[in-house]
Image (cartoon, rainbow, N blue to C red; front, side, top):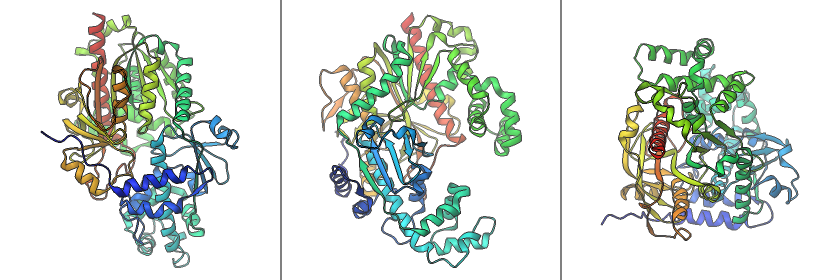
Length: 570
């Protein structure tokens, strides 16, 4: 019989985690430097050069994308579950501080304008994410500090891509490749000189403090999150729901079709301000590019609203969506997990994305006006927060008709843009191996996937954190046939077990979930390939190319919901 449980995490990673949590039990702040040795000792696949004298720019870029830019001024990081929780420890109302965010990690953080950064956390997964990131930053900062102080006078000021000779010289003195320096320069932008000057002027000695951290505190934060949704849309507790964990833009875009009504404005915008997108559009028009026109306009709208936040289009989009039963809900006073509530009977079949309309005839969707169901779509949470959130939703829902989990993953056998459909998930949190019927197959995704490949019947591992993997662990996992590495499926499946069994989920067992009384689908799009040289886990956010797999998966989920709803109403 095939083995279903991979070998446990390495001793070095276990030691690292034990050290982190033993230190954070202290009521006092903890110096990150106490973690540097065990951090380097785990040989993280994201931080392969932690022990080398030369900087690890891939690890540094990954980290800077996942921390607010004010981190260059921060000396102390506070982690807590809510504003009330932080205030009880003497930090006042942190929500009056400047709210800041990272480019590639959703986490509500507040900066006091001096040297303190406070962040809301939803589960232990946030700790497993933040602490390795801060440790990586400190290690690489101090390497650069030493090298920057040995530079020839004036070199840092003159070194820009516009001066290739000095730029190449700076890269050589920093013991990194010129292309890596270019990545760092692109990331820092106009602040390159000021940020590098700060690194040169002082060593990093960050401290971190965990403000409580009990399971009860996480439950309270989750209750705050849910109450906000329930108060704004009371129907969410009274009607049957299809639960979708994904992003908060693709489903709303597809069901409202707002961007498709603004083609002229968006084409004018890209013609004037986005030459690369203009070239892309011309290729699509000439059919030299097989990309979806609809996806193109969704991406163009995102770029437009980012470039013109003052535009009336943002308010117009919200009103357009609300008229079609789509309500966007931002989280308040707790962690950052936005939600959308979509009432199926209010949707307008005439503006829905044409790929969702059977035979191109909107009259085929007329039955939706008789539906009492809603779609509850939440922005995919980080790691174990998935368990807390789905448990809370289930406690307060009338009936769950379907659960669909969509998110990013690292693939050990695919490439960026592929889609993975697992039917086995090993969860590092519970150490359970979950077996389930994934109600999606390659045939559901492939018709709308232009650039990637669909890999179904796969096996996934839900890991504790992106830094908490090394090459040895990944090799063992791959040999056991696990090719899909992500963070949320396992915790979700633990919550799903408790939705139809009269007990808490087991520990360290093979768990059969074939009998769940609702539709279930887990779909991952590949954003990272850790076995590809020079590409670490999540080097950045997905570009327009990456939207191909995102929307192919979103379309499959919505088509299935529409199909099931038609059957239910009949």
